[in-house]
Image (cartoon, rainbow, N blue to C red; front, side):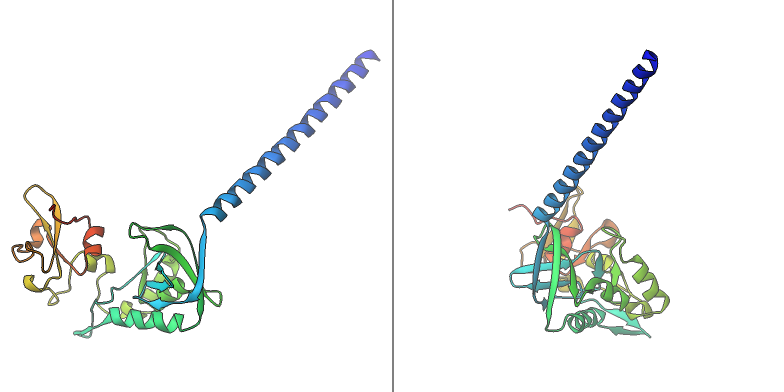
Length: 243
């Protein structure tokens, strides 16, 4: 009888211990959830307003410049080739963005900025994801380097030959590196920003008007490139010359 009572008491103690451990685990999990929510709310930012369109993947609301996260639209000055004719697909992408955004309020949220202090955001109009619509239209590509969210949208646009998928074109990241379709090359003197790889292997860019610009002869075989802006050059790993 004493053995049975002892065994029963031991079982009660183990059950109580399990109850205490379960409560402790639930409290710990609850605290972790609260900390996650607090952390996210501290870092997440949001803005709502009428957007000014910069190009096919960039907008500005008030004083906040926004880069749509996860997509890369053809550059504003980029040309694609359709039936042997050059088509200003970059301007077309900007027009599509204007049509999608319109003059109504849109809402953008983000948790980080890029090196140029642009908010890397997801933006919505009436609940619709604007980045998703741009890729659906075929005027922007899924930017796989940073996210694969819009890969299915891109594959569908490609299959149905929407936008640039019905042309011969370069990816926007190749265009920024100075690569061009045959016949679209810049003469050296017309290149806005020359990216030069010197004998030491240093990647240095020279903006038109700077003393070194006219001295640089672009040699693509040696890694030189022509860029449209200094931001494009810096994204490709080039730096300005030391003064």
